[in-house]
Length: 253
Image (cartoon, rainbow, N blue to C red; front, side, top):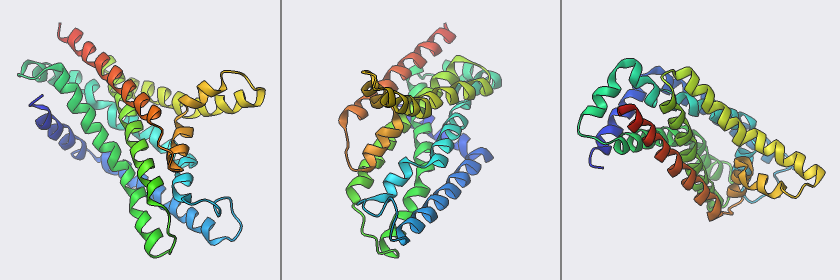
């Protein structure tokens, strides 16, 4: 795995040589500002649904529709070119003939995508000191840390999903579409499926709740860092990375 750092620098350089990365970061900055402004408005009101919460910022992020929609569009955008672009440009053959293994290529691209995912979350963290210093709202840092860890492992899983679909096709648009569908299933369909299951009181409602990333993030935002969720995210990431390596090995063979 000695070539991983070099490959990560190559991928990050490719990200920031394209205007797409800057447009996505700008979009997340706008969403973070909108969320923060809405949060301040809620906190300024004496009667609101967040007044009794010890950490409303984290809870508000987990329930933010714009945040989840942005994630579902941003992850396909940052992962669609990771492997699908290489065959079109004719660089995958060169990459796989140099002394690097398929595992090194996949891990490096996954880590580079995860770094980009972290960069998307930075705008939301920027406003927290302002809320604490200028807004005089002394929120608990524990839930913020729990939320950061949970979003990190979820991001690892999301990037692994995008990387896997990027390896399956030579068309970036198809890779992005498949990734979007998978994230839509994990984010919205699982959440609404759980809501419907609770209404009719089916016995498997708990299983859907366990798989819903929206509810997981809500729990992280309350400071409840369930290690089972983290294990699920990392296990899914490892499985998808393994499958992606196998796809590259078949391509080389």
